[in-house]
Every structure is written in structure tokens, then in C-alpha cells.
Length: 576
DNA sequence: GCCGTTTTCGGCCCGACTGTTTTCAGTCG
Image (cartoon, rainbow, N blue to C red):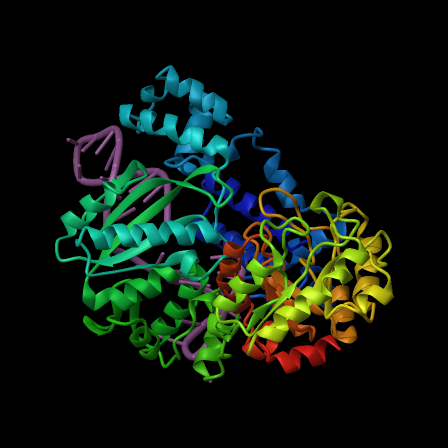
């Protein structure tokens, strides 16, 4: 899909126009269009073919034309034109905290600074202070910020953000400085990665709460500290053990504005614009303090009151992306999203027979303790050599072990499956005679990631059409921050899956989250059943289910759309 | 740039905070 490529170009155009001092609203239009493209479930190329690009909210004639231009020629002339005016590296300066378009323009045109290294050198030599608007403090701050920008400011995995949020909430409660505290922002919307963490709190003594916040263990820098807003950078260790930092904003609210603040700071930006526009049409004013008719606050203490003041049903945070959810809320047609408690099992679980760390019995017991009705064991097949894949004989030899586990257990069932490699041309790594002896089969790509789009698509379509294959594992194989998705016509794959009765997976491994929410929504729209699995390699990984369900909710899935929310009988019928 | 059941022109969100000012611009979200 070219959606993201075009979005990246629109964002770059916006940055360049910003530095050139163009009109703000024109810049905002490019940024809004970019966000729309990023969260669009449809393939923009397809929309161009159908002549429907300008139906995307925020995209009018001019941007539609640029999108069509990119789809047909692979370039946007306007983008090239602007690029020619900028030395490479200038746009990187915008990524430095504290530098916006105005200051970047000054640095570039008055001091000839065109990249991060140049900025660092100039700051070290105290050249910046010679320019109006730059002082000693700014120079110091920029020196620190430039290092962060060079590191590339990776977004946090959702699972790590959850742990950080947990520790902040616990710390603030322990200091007894807050009466109420909750995380908002993209974390609450369950985005797969989180850029910063927004914490909202109610406190009688705001100063005390702010002081407790900046004294939190792990705070490496205080970026702002005011009456209602305190910002810090916090060190943490990610789930793979690497040290990282993340910005955390604390906002202190009045109880009367709690719901308004929660609504406002949960976002998304485009969702809020949509809702606020509705309010304006009704002669109401909506902001982070409430909904107001003239000077009178008519809503604000709860989020429900904010939506209901506009005759809207409360919208789950995961849906707030301006993808049509406001219209559904207005007409009372919001879907009943799947809940974590709807999940009855997990089909993607590894053991120490291949690359997991714990024996089959331990993984089964961990799943049972979670209250599941069933668990599927899916170790690697023989060709997955790095994962110490099992031979067909080894895979089948475990049937007795599983039978004896099932004999003793009431109300809990172990299914014996496989995560079977998809070989070069779409054939499976085990012979059909072996696959049919197993309860179910996940087909996954673990090799030949660089095949051309056409061949890769044909390979996956062939695999999902195999009558023994029940589930397509981590369909795009992307790993966030490491490896992009394979080249693939996903729509073709969804169609094949829907037709063959093969489910597609949301793999909740924090690095994978594959399918993504937008992809899973497209898969559902193509008629696919979705399975939300953890790809666990240790019993603790089973906790990732919560985040897979978050992505499923962002994809607007209901319990009926999700294979592992079904009863065992219905699952068995699907696998049969 | 986009958008329209008050408008095809004239709107489009704005408050908090910092740093450098000498009354406020720039950045951020």
C-alpha cells in the first residue's frame, strides 16, 4: 500500500511549508491528510482507480490530484520542487525538542546550520547566543535535545507504556497527593506504539502532586513545571531489556472538568476536531474544561456527559480516530467491541520443544489459570531452523501427552496444532498426512521476506487455500523498529482467506502487532475471521492478549468476529 | 489546503509553559 509513502511526503511538504512561513491552515491540511492516509483501512491506489480519493475526509481536489500523481508516477512534483529548496538535514532540525519552524529558519538562514551535527557544533561554540531570541538557556537545552533527536526517539511499545503507566499510578497513589489518576492519550486509545504518556489527575494540593511527580524514580529531566501541567522525561527498561526514555505529561484537573480533560487528552486530534465542530454547529463551545452554552458549563465532570451533551453515545477510546465513529455514535449504531473478558483461549503458543522457554505442561497450566476454556499449542515446523523446529514425527508424538492432559481436565481443553512454515512457493512444511492429524494449523512466513509482491502474494494465497490450513500467522511479518512488512497484496490474501475459511491473525507480540488495526479492519471488511493470539514463548507472554484485544478493538471487531472468543464447539467446527 | 442545513468566501482551537523579552514570541500538544 502506498498510503504511508504518500502520508510521509505530505508530512514533509507540511514541514517545508512551515519553515518557509506559509499559511498555517494550509500546513494543517497536509498534516491532516497525512494522518487520514495513515489510518485508512483501504488501499489508496484502489480508491484512485475508483475515483473516490476525494471522499476521504480532509482530502479535496488539490490533494486528491497529488495522490493520483504519486500513484501513477511515483512522485509528487510539488514535493520535489520544495525539496530542491532545502539542504538535506534541515528538516531533521524540526525533530529537536524546542525547535519549531521559526527557529529552524533562523538557524538555517542566519547561521547556515543545515543538520543536527552543525547545530551541536554551533551550540558548543556558543554561536547561537548571538542571534535574537536565542539565549544561554536555549543553547543548553538544545545541546541535550539534539542528542535525543540523533537517537531517533523511538516510540514505546504499548506493553512497555502499560508498565510505565502502572508504576506512575502506583507512585502517585503512594504519595497520597492525588485523589484520582488515569492515563489518557494514545495509550488509552491502545495504539500499538506510544510517543509519550499523558497522565491526568485530580489533586487538592497541585503543588504537592507536581512535586511528587518530578521526584518519581526514573525521572531524568524536568521539561516543564507549571500549575496545571508538569512534563518529565522518564527512564525505563523495555520488555527486551534495553534502556530507554519516554516523555510523560501530568495534567492536573478540576473534578468538574475531569471528563472534559479525559475526553480532550485522549484524542485523537481528528476525533476531537470532528466532535468540537459538531458542538459549534449547535452553538456550544467545547474544550478541555467542558461543554459550554454561553458561559455556563453544561457538561464536563464525566466523559459520558461530554458526549451526551452532543446527543452522542459514549465512544470507546480505541475507536476515536475520526474514521466514521462519530456518525455511528450519533445514530446509535456503535458496534459492541470485543472485551478482554470475551477471550476464551489463545492459539499461538510455543513451548521449549522449539524456541519457547517452558514445557508444554507449564504453558497449558498458565493458560488454564487465566480462566481460558482452551489453549492451542503451536510449535515451529522443521524448516524453522533458527527456532529449532520439530520434525513431523516429533510433532505427532506429542498427541499422547495432550490426550492425557485433556483426560484429567474438566472444562479446559488443549488443542495440538503447529505453526507450520510456508515454503518457497506456498507449499507447507509438513505433508498433508501430518497436518490432518493435528487439531489445527497456523501457516506462517519465516523466510524469503524479499520476494516480489506478485510472487509473495501468490505464495500466501496458495498457503491459505491449503485445506488443512486454518489460520494465517502474523501475515505481514513486520517487526516494529526492525523489519518492514513483506511486499504483499493484502486484499488478495484477505479474499483468499475469506473464501477458503482461513482465519487471519492479530499477533500480539509487541514487536509484531501484525495485522495492524487498520489491516485487521480491512480483513474483517473482506469477510475474514480474525484470531487474536500472543505468539507466547513464555507463560508471562500470555498477558500480551490484552494489547492484541486493544488492536482488535481499534479494528472495530466484535466478539463474533474473533475466533478465540468463540466456544470450543464453534472453534472445532471452524477447524474441521 | 479543506469545507459548507447560517457561508463558494471566510472561517479554520487555543491554552499552558518557557525563555527572552521589556510586554511577548515560539513551541507544544
